[in-house]
Image 1 (cartoon, one colour):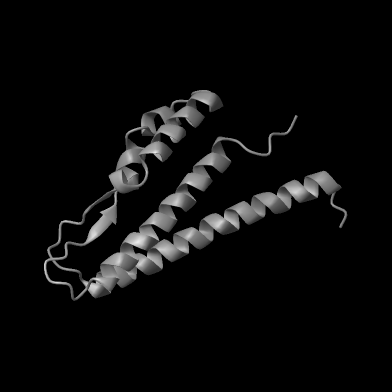
Image 2 (image 1 turned 45 degrees about the vertical axis):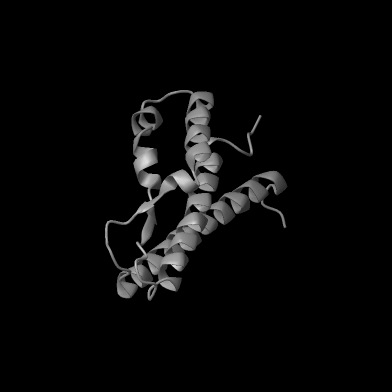
Amino acid sequence: MIELTGVTAQAVKLALDVSILRHQVIANNIANVDTPGFVPKRVSFEDQLRSIESSLLSGRSDSALSAELDRVADRLGSNSIVDDGDETVQIDLEMVKLADNTVRYQTLINALSNRGTILRTAITGGRS
């Protein structure tokens, strides 16, 4: 039986959720560029993902990996938003982060689209 969802799809969904959160945080930083005392924020998803990296690379079962990804997803949100370390918003840097995040998001969407095309081809036997 072919599984239409799995750990890879779950990881991509999580990465998309992080990308959306990151976009919101960057937009908030940009919106507060002139706000006195505002401390820019960032999303610390990679730090959380690194905490389970050995599990992801160890060849564990899909169900164990899925459980690890669920734990990371549960911590995603306000726990993932931390101070950036700068005392002021650097608009040029935020714009670079925004562009980078947009490219990553589009890449993830394209990957899902390609997966859908492959599945559609497999289901239809290559016929339109």
